[in-house]
Length: 121
Image 1: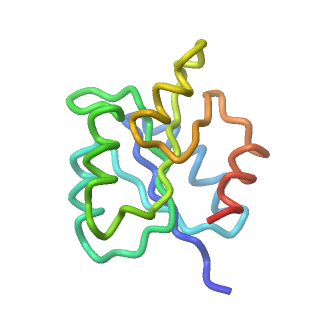
Image 2: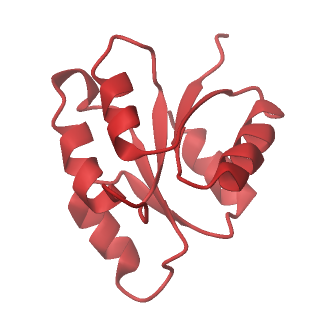
């Protein structure tokens, strides 16, 4: 079985490091981008991406702006995009889903929940 490839989009290198280490230990392949524009450029290519973990709070272009653009790419309409944010207040999950996220994961990340979500890809 081929490893699933996850794109991690986060402006904090510590978050990228932690997510990458966690997912690689569970046989996922990880690619990282430090901003939404870099991720959009990658997603426009034919590169295999099975899922995206998108930080919703980034400078320049946040996840709420990037998500519809990602979902608007013809080759990515069916790619699951999971919103990842420290904004874990009432209504934030709904706001992420309304923006087009497949699902929502709050920081600090519950690894079991994340792995459950990724098990569906």
